[in-house]
Image (cartoon, rainbow, N blue to C red):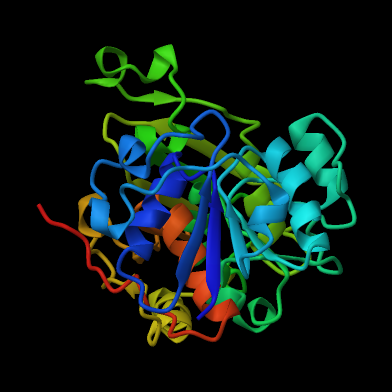
Length: 347
């Protein structure tokens, strides 16, 4: 049985992964680690995990030697920490799935959007390096032998799943993405702008036009990069989890609703976690709450010659821990749905 360890196990991504692993029959959790949380129990950060399913496990300090005993290590850490840990773990022969943005971009693009040099350019994602961009439904062949997987960001996952199959039908110029996310997307750290009294009853745009996920979407919409800028505007809404992305793109001449439907159905008809709804039926975030599911729909606006695509995911599951586990299942030849066969909770 493959073994797994988690660094950053007290963060939202880490605790969500532990929740999913509690019902996974094919992975052995041999280590949970954290920095400031070392010495506390899993249940301190995740009261939903019972003692007999790992809630009483004590988080250890981060030690590469101990972590390298695992077959795969998931890094739920900030990008600067992942940039230090991933090379050391790979050198020790351990496979890595990273939840941060450290390895999603090539080194030059990373520097342009993060404002500092990439400290491990030999691992940066550019199609020739070890890092595999883990948008599972479009990355399976590369995942099987991957040593390092850059787990996609939450907004890019919600955007790219509906957009990638349509790229041959739309003009690359003028793609507009407007998305909303719950507060858990900002992580567990305490911030004044995330206090309940501030967030409740409020909706606010942020990060535009230089949110880092813009570069990620542009880099992975097509192989080799889109080559054209997109407009991406994220918004914070008063809910704990969930993302809804609305994508507008100009259709190529002669493309209609049947072509759009055929492209999406052709890409996802047999996928367990991507559900295409009929045109005109719009997905909602609550339908995927707690599940590794993306719901999407697309409708053609003949008046403007555009396609309007809407998708929803749970940012902590399909947008983070669930997709990471899906990738790990593929990496180790396990049934892809193991630990993930949960439908969303409604209402």
